Length: 399
View 1 (cartoon, one colour):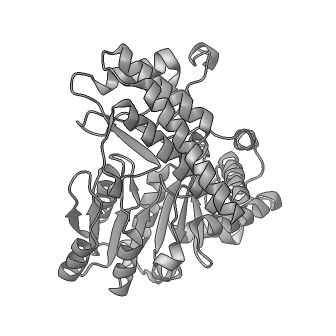
View 2 (cartoon, rainbow, N blue to C red; view 1 turned 45 degrees about the horizontal axis):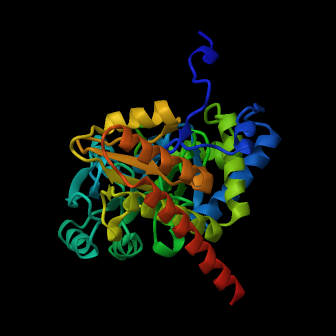
C-alpha cells in the first residue's frame, strides 16, 4: 500500500513527548543525499561539531553523532565510560534514569541505585551521602525525566559534587537540551546525551553525545576491547574527526541536524530558553485554570514535558484517542500504570498557535468524555500568562 493510503488526510499536530514537529528547512535537508566521505560532508560535520559545542555549552568537548535514537547515544556514553567492574551510582527517578542503570549492568558494572520518590527530584544531600557510602567511578542521572515529567533541578550542584569526588558524570538531556540551561563545562559534566527528535526539533534516529576532556582521556586510556562496535567512540572518531570510514553515515539525518542546530544558534540559547519557559508556563496555567491537576509539584516540575493527572473515572487512552480523532492533536500517555497524559513543550511545539489548539482540544475532549472542565477559564489563563511574559520582556528591554 502507498503511504497516501495509510497516513491521515490531515496531519496530526504532534504535541506529545516526542517526536515533535520539524521546521521546513530541517525537513528539506532530510531529503538530500550526498557522499558521506566527501569534502562537502567534511565541511558539514565541522559545522555540526562547532554548533553542538554552543548548544552543549562546552569549549573543548568532543562531539560525536550517533546513527540511532537517543537511547543509542545513551548507550554510547555508558559503553565507553563504564568498564566491566566499574562502580556506578545511578540516580533513578523514572523510566529513562532506570535505563541508564540497566545499560550499566549489561556491561557488568557494579550498579547502586539511588531511588527517588515518585514525583520528586534528586536531593543533593541524599546524593552526597550515596557518593560517600558507595564511592562510585561513574554517576548517571537525567536532567529531565520524560516518563513522569520530573526535573532534577539540583543537577548543577550534584554534578559538581560528584566531580569533586573523582566521579565521571553522565547526564541524559534528551528532552531538555536547548529547552533549558545546561552548562556542560561549568557544571563539570563528562557526557551529555541528546536525541534529535525533541528539543532540537530534528528527525528521530540521529543523536549527539558530548564528552568532556576527562571522559575522552578515559576512553583513550582503556586497554580492553569495547563490546559495542558501532558505538565505539574511538572508531566513531575516525569519521567525526579524521574524515575516515567508520560505517555509512546517516547522511540525510546529519544534514537535518545541521539545519536544526543552525536554527537553534540563530535564535540563540537565551531567547530559546525564554520561549520555552513562557510557553510551558502559559500551558500549565491554562491546564490548571480549567480545573485539571498537574502531576508534579512546581519545585520538581519539568517544563519541556507537562504531565496531567486524569480523573479515575476517565481512561487516559480514551482522552488520547478523542483528541487525536476529533481534533487531530496527538499527545502522549504514561509509562507504566499511572493514569496521566503528557504534553510536550520542546522546540517547534512551543509556538503560541500550537498552545491554543492543544489546550482547546484537551478541554473539549474532557467535556465530551463527561469530565467537566472550565475551558473558557483555561483559554483565558493561557492568554493572560503569555501576555504577562510579553509585558515583562518589554519592560526589561526598555530598562
